[in-house]
Length: 423
Ligand code: AMP
Ligand code: GLY
Image (cartoon, rainbow, N blue to C red; front, side, top):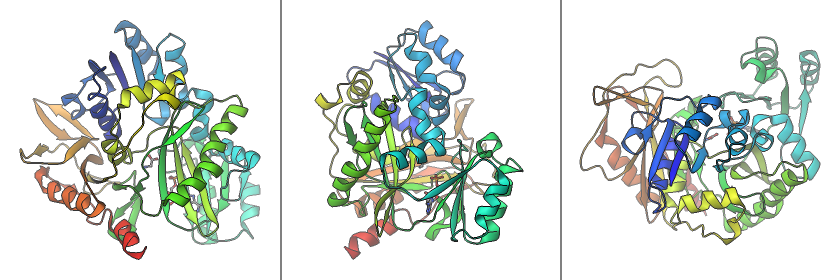
């Protein structure tokens, strides 16, 4: 089988490494991939949003199966374009990817079908939003409607911050057209859990739960980033909570999408907050999370290709999806200065005795050398029978991955360990 994976980050590297283990997979292309992915797949210089070129490549190279990993091409309709040419895909069609593509759509869906989420108001006019904020409860949360590279959310701790956020989204177009419509929602508190799930639109099979670490600095300080590390499983996500989420959130969401004529196939990501009043949906993503994938897939014992095929052809109920009962920790090594200004172009080397998986996110090949090329450069993932051992192993291997200007958090997983000791 010839497989094509659209995307080029650490998440795609983890997907590709897992797909390569399937006996059915003979050849993997990555569009565009990156300098590190080039060790595991043939990289093709086609951008993930260039849908016409992606489809043309797939036809020309007789691709048997496509995996569309990032949000942009999914929301733009890459799966529709490929399926319409007879190429089976893992990933939702455009009319289902809207669950991530529009926060207003997803909030209205949850309201209509009684899926627990933060209370909210939608605004299309700035004056109305500013008027509402005059006596809205503070803190409050302002969200741009559309995709904004994961940055379209402002937690406003004061009324001034809230009005500034509304102005910068709606008047200054800080996130372009994504912010011309906004959601203002209730501020919730509680531990956060990421649950990625496989679904064929009929059954939904949650993967092992995980915890992201979004802030740049230790102790959850510093700016929000695309994710500085992850652990799995998430200790806050107990069996009782998992059961409740299946009944109150996961199945109702898949059923709601079907009722709307928007069957969702692929990876549906539930960003949850475990509030004192129960689990609430913070966000849906129409794809694997990054860097959640880098801890979830290493724990998958079943054949990823079989599962992806089953999501695409509606046979997920008959397919084995088994995770190990061990744990994983991924430490992101970034360029110092990320998510603001940073230097790159430094050679990356991995010592021969490195015992962790290295998933490359931002790197390019130049004269046979791998050079850093991005804010988040790579993730170092270790698996072990328990979380403490996984964390220790990940951090023992980080010094074996070398590049100038590397920066990483020292406390990935510490909050989770504390949660275990408190339970
Ligand atoms: P997102 O970029 O959508 O992943 O959101 C970024 C972060 O904002 C989430 O991971 C939460 O920590 C936080 N957040 C989003 N919505 C809320 C909310 N209603 N209450 C409190 N925190 C929130
Ligand atoms: N780690 C969060 C995301 O992928 O959106």
